Amino acid sequence: SVKDRLDRLARETKRSKSSLAAEGIGTFVDLEERQIEGIKQALASIDRGLGVALDDVEAWVASWDTDDELPTPTAV
Image 1 (cartoon, rainbow, N blue to C red):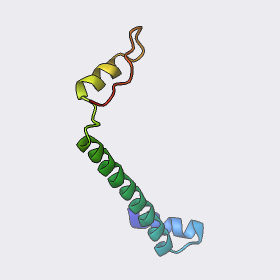
Image 2 (cartoon, rainbow, N blue to C red):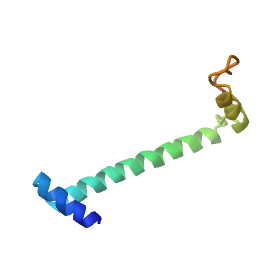
Image 3 (cartoon, one colour):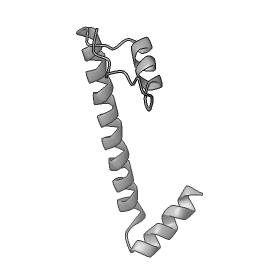
């Protein structure tokens, strides 16, 4: 279980369980905040008309490693 793993890690690192848990929670919160900010930026770009059509992206990806590789699609 996670509790057993945390107990073992605390013993092996000679750190308290609460300090390990706080560090883990801090890392999780940092990651979630970065993801949310990235989503907000992407949505704002789309609202400004900077989106790329899915069909264009799919065609571009499908062309990778071919003799007729397409250029990176641009915002429409």
